[in-house]
Image 1 (tube, helix red, strand yellow):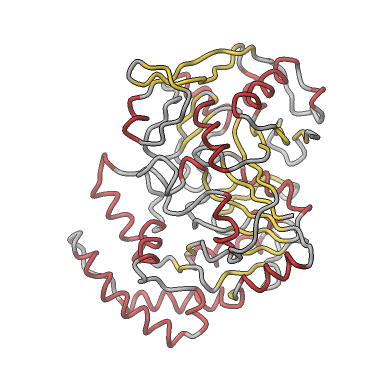
Image 2: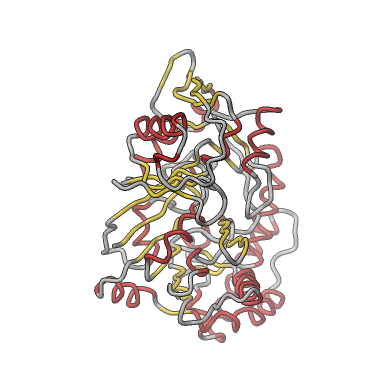
Length: 425
């Protein structure tokens, strides 16, 4: 089986938790896009882990983890993330972690450029994590990137960096800042490259051989459908393709086809970053839900914007991802509600619409139309079967399935690893 675990909404849906939960069923876990702007929180019997660059399967002892060519990798962050896991007893070796030789290296000048641009934009900013992701992807398509494979020949890498720094300095000087320093950049490269070079190789032969031999491969996405560079709420998107359809390409095996797509969606809505968020709560209503769900960005620590479950956006996400089933996370958070708010449609310029308008100008004018479902007011963390849930909770799950046109295969009922329900088809 080749399975993709992808986000249905704005990201932070709980993909890392689902990957960790299902990783024991897979031989290989692949991250296929994004960089250390991701924040996947995993809670298991070893404790709580926040992973930025590493695939969530790295916490499983029997999986091989691959960082595909669709990623951008800050090698300083990567080496520190590896060291932090090793200090907590997690084995990270060249045998269980592979970094594609085609992945782009996110350099210090990318971070600098990212920060300067967000500061220049001021109140018009896009909500960047300021970790250099957008400039790194931009340079990739400008053919000004340094690939991980270049680090295997440091003389070639250093020559390449000097050429790129000369060009990049023209951009940075436009912000009124002195251009990038080649010597400082090379010092950084010499410090961190040796720590990760043993992990670098071509992912294509390995993954093709794994697929041919019948191994189960899981593809792990960062963010969600509404942040996809092409089909998300542009320009309030990430800088890569977050869709399942890109999974095998971003992994390095574009000729392969997926067998299964599992979309992850929260039982309510949350959003980190700027841009339209039609179902958003404000004031005490937002704070109540934010505190109940612990809604703070795993990568940034920023408070997430929150709202009721958005049927319109979630249906669009399911269709865009081509999800075969969904995992509904954080259902337990709604146990505090007497009445559960659900955004069932939008009011756009006086017209009730149920089709998601991905254009940001239309979304910025849309207003949520809410309906309310009965709450279940009960601790559900011990439920392990659908029939264990209160009737109102089952009705809520059934409503989500019907409204987004996709069955629920998993329901999380608590934060611990075993606090979930697997629903048989």
